[in-house]
Amino acid sequence: MVAYTGTPARSRSIRALNEPQTVAVREGEAGQPLSVRLGKSWRLVARTDDVWRIDDEWWRERPVSRLYYRVTLEDGVSLELFNDLVSGEWSRQRV
Image (cartoon, rainbow, N blue to C red; front, side, top):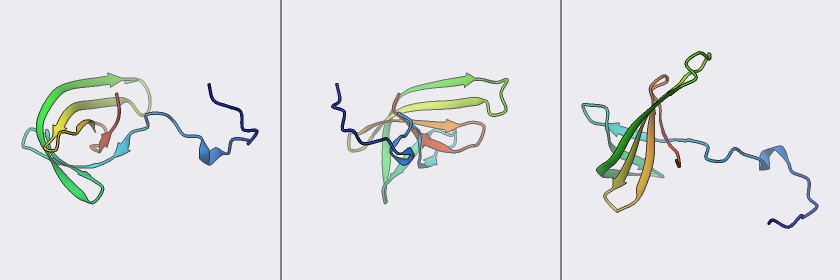
């Protein structure tokens, strides 16, 4: 339970949970992530642990079509990345 502070919520203090963050990704020939830019440095992908695809809301103006990758970086950090197959952009998101 969170204590009530009496301070009204401001619009800039409210954000969606689990919002994807755009990231730069270097891809291999098959489109798989080879390295990810986190902050100012590039980190190599040591292995891909899982791959899955989500296609949803195809009837809407902006359908969802994403190819997700759960990867482990060379320093042991685990990330979930996805390639938005509609826009071509890469993002990082907790799943």
